[in-house]
Image 1 (cartoon, each protein chain N blue to C red):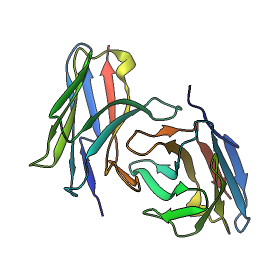
Image 2 (image 1 turned 45 degrees about the vertical axis):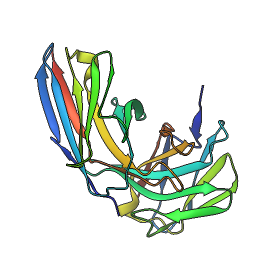
Image 3 (image 1 turned 90 degrees about the vertical axis):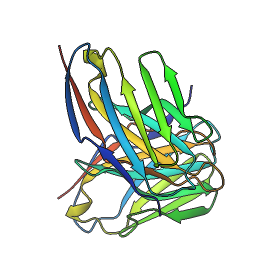
Image 4 (image 1 turned 120 degrees about the vertical axis):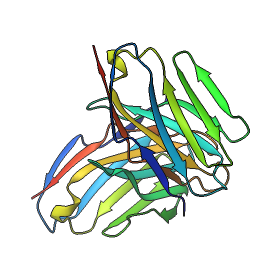
Length: 113
Length: 111
C-alpha cells in the first residue's frame, strides 16, 4: 500500500520568513495530493491540492510543487504570519475508484511574531 | 456549505463497554471515512466506505467495526472498548476525485 513520509515534524520560523514542508510517497499510482491545515482544537481543512498532471500550483502565499519522478511534493508558505501556526498534513491518494487516502504524520508549524 | 457532524465531542467510557460513534454528512458524498488521531502518529485510517452497505478496512481496523445503512450516516463501533482506544476520532466524507471534509472530532477516553 501507499506510504507517505513527511518532514520536518516541527518547524519554527520568524514571522515574514518562508516555511517549507516536504512529503514523499511510495505508490506511483497516486495522482492526487491534498494538504490540510489543522489549527489547535479544530478539524483539518483543505488549504491546497495538486493533481499529477501539473507540477506546481499557487494560491496567494501558499504553493505546492510535485515531482512525480522523485515521488515527492512540497508545501511552501511565504511571508508567514502568526495565524499560519498550525499542524499541516500532506496526503496522497489515487483519485479514481475507491479513494483510500494516506496521510503524512504532520508538521507542527510555529510562526514566531 | 458542507457539513459533517459527529454525535459527541467528548465521551468517557469504561473498559469493555460497547461504544458507538456516529457521523452524518449532508452533501450526498459517496465516500466516508473514520480516522483516529494520536500525537506524533498523524491521521490513521480505521475504515472507509465508498457506498451504502460497503466498507473497506483501513490501516488499523482491529477492535473496530463500522456500519453504513444510509448514504449520509457512517457509524464506528468499538465492540469492547479498551484503554488503548483512548484517542481523538475524526470522521470525513468526500466525493471521489475530491478532497475530504472532516467532522469536528470525538475525543474518547476509556477508563
